[in-house]
Length: 89
Image (tube, rainbow, N blue to C red; front, side, top):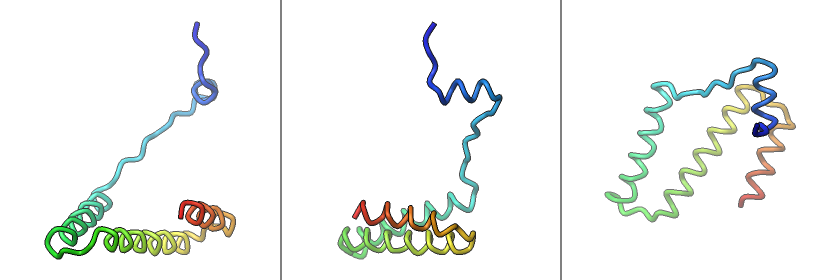
């Protein structure tokens, strides 16, 4: 008999199920609009790809900070996110 990984065996032993979260309509629309606007900026307006990527990164950072402040993330979570962002850059 093959040995199961710890995550699978613990899920089975404790009876917990893993639920996958799906996007709701509003989230899907936002993603579609962002991708569409990005493509339009690059193709129709002749904006350089690097500028568009910087714009998207800035918007994502602002959105992440807004969500963090509105949900009152702990300072520890903010440090973890900042460390991840700074090491990736």
